[in-house]
Image 1 (cartoon, each protein chain N blue to C red):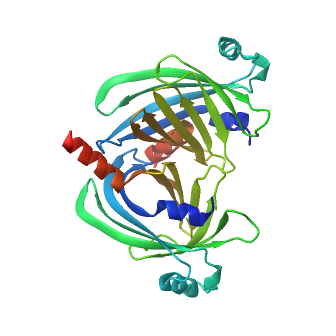
Image 2 (cartoon, chains in turn green, cyan):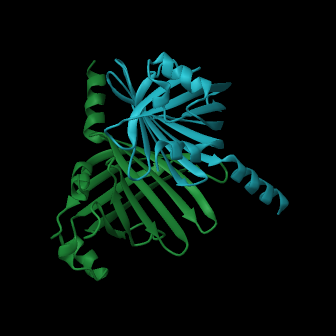
Image 3 (tube, helix red, strand yellow):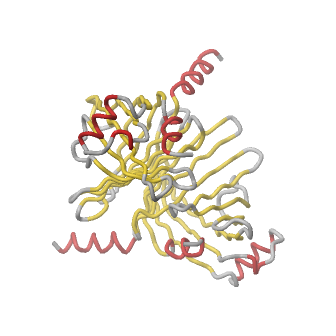
Length: 183
Length: 183
């Protein structure tokens, strides 16, 4: 499996249930959202534009991934909405790893470039880092319709937040809901 | 890093913050516990006894790991307490993987043998399976003092539960608490 395969099986509509653990206060907070994940070809104008913004040759891009979400966190009833496009640029020297370009319309705190690595256990690790913030995200499939995602965020003074999302492919829950309603 | 190295760096006292997502109802529940993790040599009588119970030559054991916990879940104020001993038996043919023997004094639902695999990303995957239940646990270190753990449980009719634990080495939180109290 390469990064494009991983993105391909991620494409679709998902229901995401997220919990964050604040590592200093040991408090947790939950949120729920709908995700729409779309694979973009390397020739997609958005992918080409992101490459150009980072002064990377567009034909070095493997593909693109657009992730859009709409949801809310438990303690804040206002809707959260946003989208991000990721563009992996494969390393020549290291199989399954490379640079990750990113363009977000919502989260300005996350750096615009990072690294990705697909492990032998088929877990994808994404790392973004700048002077003040380090974020590491790990994503894998428990089954084709259940995707798990964790992230840790470290500020200058140490790790501050650990989050977990369980993501269910929406067609599956809808089918289950219909079956349950019909029975 | 091999399985014994992984167990070695896991040894110590940890504070664990756990959240479970019920995948059918989309409800979550949190719990907190103190963990005590102890590395056992392969010559430890408990390790030898577990090998004998599984009709495995004790000198094939890599080592043992005793995990004891004491805590509670949010919706149930009664204390949860238990311990498990894990004994890895390395595969000859596959590096970083093998059979996992297990003896628990609390959870009778989990099978007594399983598989382990240490990925190139230094995440340890533990799989236990019997006729009615499949459980997959993944454990890794975000830093020497922050360990993350996820698990998914699948019954005959599909995945039912996804859990996430963030675990902080207790010395660290105590130091932080002392520093905070002193300031």
